[in-house]
Image 1 (cartoon, rainbow, N blue to C red):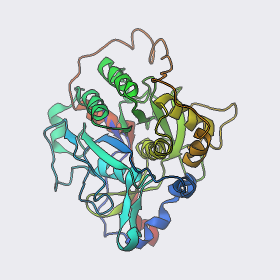
Image 2 (cartoon, one colour):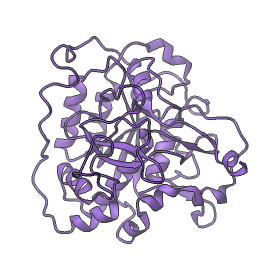
Image 3 (cartoon, rainbow, N blue to C red):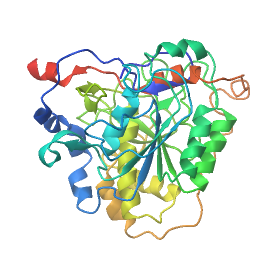
Length: 381
């Protein structure tokens, strides 16, 4: 996906803008998934690969026929109802990329080819709440932010989601908290679903607050490169929880090619995969306990234990699983109190009329993946 575009409100945390190219060699994909090594997934997989966990992917849709996701995708929900559909180029690209990061199983002989996700035995529950950045139908709803995201969060919580991945957000200059969305997040947390969102791709454009990442109780993911350095585009804000890979990460596409992308969208998907592993190992823990586990067990913590760029450090599912073994489940969610005001205070908190798809444009900009090019191009260079 592509770099953020501030055309409306909701934008994908990984903007879609893939370049046409010949298919990458499948056997070269796995060795380029540096993020799996960075997260010590092999260590976590000695305990679990996420079996029994459902991760809701609220996005542009998911291609359930993709070889890396076949058998992994549950019947979902389309809360948009118009725009591109299966088979169209502007359909399910971002959502498929995120689903692959979370629960891809690869394909071919022994599943040796293609994308392997962080939690390859988890299931994906697709909920379409936004259009792709390149969907011509976006112009029909530009400038309005509707209820699709809030409704999607509630629907996912009511349909068995253990984790809700939100690789999207509004980090535009006019971003404001939306009461319905905030209430939906609290509803999901109260039902025991862990909510993960991309922190935003505004690091080079003012570090504007991004929603839903800034809502209380959300695990907000910032992005780092393969060396653990903060990605320049990654938003720095008080709500940063943990960091995860978000630069030159391998993503699957409905066109059956593989690309490299960037964005806090990808970081959120990696964190959701990590949460799925922790949930599978410790199913009784509350969302607040899991959030605390991720922070306490994170690696490469910044001076002082956290900062706005990296949160508590790089997420480490294996360490979180180990640390969680000594915890006892606590009843009900513990949501940390929100700041008195979001953004600039009472004036900034004023509510504005909202509709559906501008949210789509803003969110896409908030955490979208920037497609750097196909893997085969990089290999050739």
